[in-house]
Image (cartoon, rainbow, N blue to C red; front, side, top):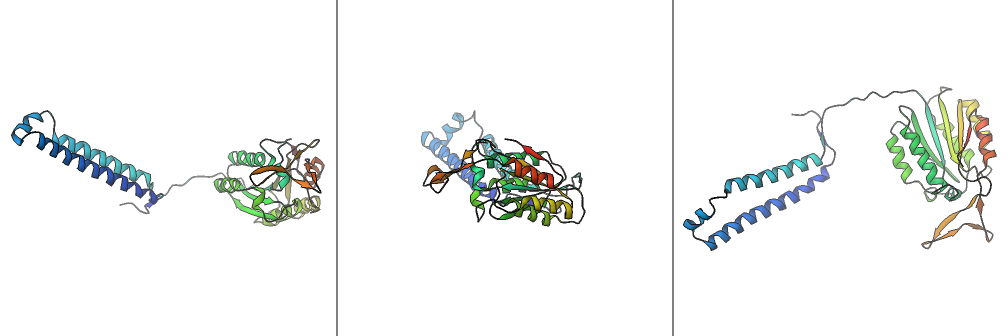
Length: 280
């Protein structure tokens, strides 16, 4: 009857067991009522006593209840058919978002912490983006492509939910490597309409991010924009969980205080004709 019909949630068919259970209870209730009436009065006396009630009406009500439950299960399995086309405006802008997931991003000088705030900004960005391809790269000691360039923003949001410092195999912060990875991951040779957005506190471990940004712009036409998270004056300690308790990261017996580095992020942006945004 329908061409290409499909069911999105076939697992919901398990609710038919509940329908069967209700049907069995109704049958048992009918039988128990009949037996109780037979014990109470003879068939000749029972008819006048039950003249005001209708057995047929009770059966109709029970049938409608079962039918409505079956239709409800049919709706839960989400049947779909046919084809629906949606016009998407394609402006031809490709954007790689680089998210710093080093341990310093756990500092709480931005609430709830730098990393969660950055993820919130990315989610807001996706909500306001229409038709542009966006990719997500995380970086710490190593860089990883979480999602390639896509217009499936829901997939990017799903990837964001699982991102934490423990999701990368090596600690540290190598922004330059992440910029080089993003620059090499654009899928066409057009020298325009490409950008990299970096969300970080600016800490780097000699990965030459300024040189990487300059190379991305000169060789691929990729502009780099940077967003700085954290307090650049006082900074904050880095909380970590150990044995169910929260302690602060130390180095040689002293607690580490992490500060946002606006100079690094500004130089990276300027090297690739971009701009630095200090969100504190």
